[in-house]
Structures are given as structure tokens and as C-alpha cells.
Image (tube, rainbow, N blue to C red; front, side, top):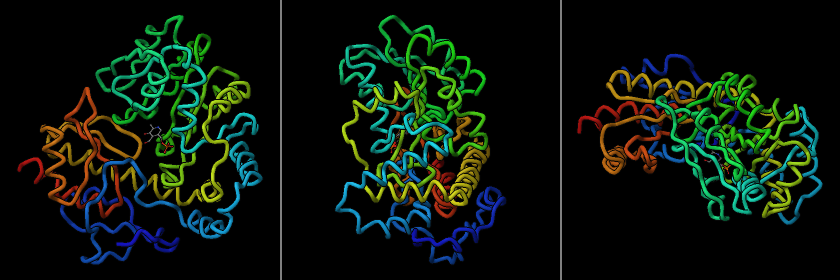
Length: 373
Ligand code: PLP
């Protein structure tokens, strides 16, 4: 099956009934005229939280058009792109820091606020990039266990802040558990905690949520709080390989973060693709809907098979297959599926990235066999 989709193919999908059909073992058509020999072949990656549908048709066209500009730094295009992001977010260009993926702006924020040994308050279990980086530049990490539902425990995190804290890192939805903290709760936390330290809110997966506008902490930035929000083009936009992301923060904070970036320019291909992708809201809607179906499929399977899972949002599920991660990986591989690495302190829970509808059908057929093998 080809990933070189065009717009006509993309929107020729059937929606809704995917969960029931897959559970019943029937074929599911996600938009392709799927014939039996069009099933995915080779290892299907359900491990990297990438977008199996992306890049969008508009981004592909933009990449083709921009390829002749790869000899240039493309500074002017980058400035235009920053203006475009600012307009979309309803802030000024001075609020935006572009990065090589959101990784760069997350790390630059860590460097800006923790390089002098200030510590980071972070959830355990959570996305390890920021704590890993701030500890590499000399800060301690105050790990705070998740609550019983594997969500950030904001009260406990608040209590772990000390005079020596530089950053509180919140990943919403959290990776790898997929859990969200509610918007009112997080808003109160940001308003109060950001009087003492920077609250870094990583929204890499928030665009998969139906309530993006209600859940984003962007309004806290707009109100002038000490809050940094990061976004990426690697997830719903399907551009992980082009390394594009950005931070949104009060201009004085943005300026401080920008000073610690390693790369001052993003490449013209990435800028062109991301700019086109921003406008391709049909593609984003398509991915959000397909991913939601895929997540629900996994959760329904877990219900049927009697295994635990978290209330995950984002393009992945977090499930307890009741075996070691090594055994799960091996059994997944024998069905042509690649699973994610262990995530201590829950090393035997498995993070399953939501792939295309066809890929998820392969998973749906394999999971009962994997569990009973
Ligand atoms: N934040 C979270 C929660 C992630 O899971 C990832 C990557 O998987 C990133 C940030 C970094 O992504 P990127 O650098 O591709 O924007």
C-alpha cells in the first residue's frame, strides 16, 4: 500500500464503523480502494508516535516546489512563516521561537532556565527529553509520580517546587500514558505556579484532541504569565523528518529561549512544508478523526480482551498486555508489527502508536493471538 496519497484518495474514506468491523474481523476501508493484496506489508511501525498518513498533500506539493531552494538559508521565508504562525496563534511574531522540531525549543528552554544548576520538576512517568537535557546541563530532577489514573499530579508537583527550581514541565497529553490534565485545573496551576517558576507546557499531541481550544494553555501566555507552550509539526502534520516545531511565550521569555537555540535557521523545505500544512486543515481533521477511531478500536479491544489501558488522547494508546515488554515486542514482530520500547516505571505497559486504519486492523487481528500465545 502506498503512502503517496492524493487528496481524492484521502477523503474517500468511510468513517464510524471501523471499531466494530475490525473487532468482527472484517476488512476496514480507510479511504483507499482496499483490495486484499493491498494490506500493509513488512514491519508496521506502531512505535514512534509518528503520523502514518502524513505529510499532507499540500505539504508534499510545497516540498516539491521548494526543493530548488535547498541551496539557500531561506531567512526571508522563515520570517514570513513566523508571521503566519503568530497570526494563527493570535500573538505577535516576537512571541514565537522556531525550532528544529519542538525538541530544540524544549531543550533551549531547559538550557535557558536550568543551566546554572536549577532543578526541573517533572512527572514520572513522562516524556524524558526535557528532564534528560536539564540534568545533562547540570540540574537535578524532582520526579513526581503520576496519580492513580496515570495523570500528572499537579498538587504534588506544586509541592515539589523549591527556591532552586527553574522549570516545571507538563506534557499534555502526557507521553507515553496519553492522559490529559483538565483545562481548569491546569489553568489554576499555571496561574499560581508561574509566579514562582516557568511552566513549560508541551502540547505536541494536543491537536489530536477534540477540545484543543479549551485545553491549550496559549491563553495563559497571552495573559502574560510565565508560561511557555510548545507545538510540533511532527505529529498531526506528519512532518517528523523535516524537524519543525515552535515555542510560544511572552516576548521577553521567547527572546531568552531563542538565545539558547543551537540552529538559528530552519531549512527552506521544512518551512515550506510546515507553512502549507498549517493551512491544510482538512488533512488535520482527517488525521484527528482516523486516530480517534484507531484509539477507540484499541480501547474496545482491551475491554473485550480484559486488559487495562489509560484514558489516552494523542495518537497512541497505553495498554497493559500482561507480559514483559520483551515478550510483547517479540510477539508483535511475529505479526509484522513493531512496538515501542519499555517505559519505566511501567516497563511492561505498552505504548501503541495509532497507525492507518489498515495497520490498526492488522493489530486488531494480532492482539488476541499475541495475548493468548
Ligand atoms: N514532545 C513530546 C511529548 C514528544 O513525544 C515528542 C516526540 O515524540 C516531542 C516533544 C519532540 O518532537 P519533535 O522534536 O519531533 O517536535
